[in-house]
Length: 227
Image 1 (spheres, rainbow, N blue to C red):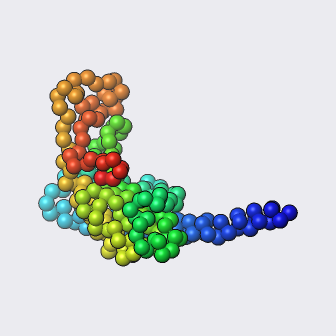
Image 2 (cartoon, helix red, strand yellow):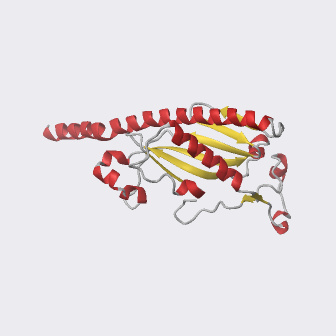
Image 3 (cartoon, one colour):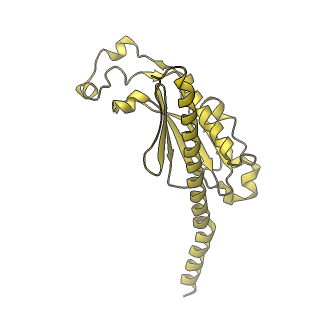
């Protein structure tokens, strides 16, 4: 039937137009994530050498957790880098979608994404399940290896020209260093006394008494969901 042939042709065209592009984006994202790991490992190695002359008790560590996650620990902070396996796009009203670079070629609107979260190192060490983590940055990369970053502080405006931002090791190192600086700039603020008058046995057993309601100053989400 012609209708069946038309439907099959439409499916083939969709696969060509979308699935193939998304596969390319995914492969690019894996390569970028591996480059990030290399840069993160290099930064930690360099910090270890420099810290030895200052204070050997300051923890500095690189750790991998499977194919899609690695972490950097430095002092009391820990950054977790996580590569999402899905390829995404955004609604037309999202500011990124208004850039001429995307409007010139809609195949550029599909992105792999890597999130960078900041946790207290002790939250992970003591398995304090209720302690919050804070989104430092979201890194997006498309099929042409152009990237865009949303995030906290300088990370929210330094890397937003998608047409000009092309992935390389130097850019990735700078993004990691900026993320680490943002994490250290945000001090942990203790909760008010009335807020911790009560606790639970769960909090006691998970070593999170009084800590779960503390927060890092400077991390506030607005109504758009960005930092």
